[in-house]
Image 1 (cartoon, rainbow, N blue to C red):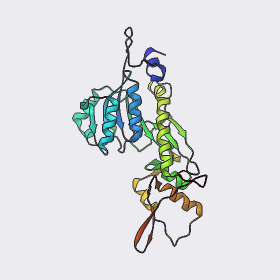
Image 2 (image 1 turned 60 degrees about the horizontal axis):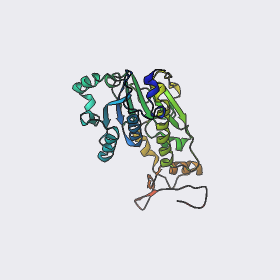
Image 3 (image 1 turned 180 degrees about the horizontal axis):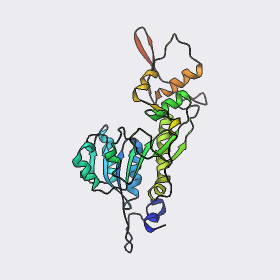
Image 4 (image 1 turned 90 degrees about the vertical axis):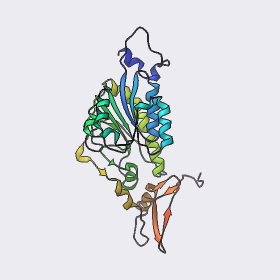
Amino acid sequence: MNLREQQSNPRNNETQNELPTHHIYEPNYIALFANHLPGLKVAEYLSRCAPYDQIRALYLTGENIDFDETIIQATGISRDRVFTGPDVIKSQNHLDWLEKQELDAIVCVYWPWLLNENVFTLAKKTINFHPAFLPINRGWFPHVHSLIDGSKTGVTLHQIEKGADTGNIWAQKEIPILSTDTAKDIYDRLQNEIVKLFEEKWDDIKFGRIKATPQNHSAAIYHSKNEIEKLDKVDLDASYKAKDLLNILKARTFGNRGFAYFEENGEKIYINIKLSKTTKFE
């Protein structure tokens, strides 16, 4: 294990922000595509790993300006290295600039758009975060589909390829659904677990201590974004197994919001449920 490897993780070095004066180190250059809370948590983690991990370019969705600003502040990155939206990486001028950054890694955290090959091939390694136990539930809203059909849930770090969530797997962990889980419960837990998995495996990936393994494509399940809309209507004249109906309502309850509905007198009536192992509900 070399000095850079020993010092790269803040858990291994309480003074990670102080450079050794008698050694030459090689920083690890990263382009971070960050979104939602996991994007912020990963930005904070990589910043704690500085100067051995350096974010050379930060990409944000622009969907929540205030939250994007929180991510920028967490990284401490120069404003001229921050880019917003999906179109900037379609520019050849920008791609030329990105190539000059000599990236060691591209890290995509809940990024909602696929990266083109001329982007992800600019780095020696790529990591995408997907909140499912791949190859099960590639694509959109995997937690919703697991609640409905009972498919295995988990989190996966994988390489980026042309297809959606098709790349070789760096690491994954199964995260079982609890009997009281609604969509929001398992969604939040998957977010926490995937960040923990990244923190546990980042050094192993970075230093080549683990190899990415191919997915079993014959077992793959893919869900498109618009599939979810077909799940919401509850037909009051239809027959449902109690378990199937309960799973639909659990899958379409997200915090204080409810997306499942039935129609009565020409109006949509939306449904939100709570579950508890006691008679008390918080």
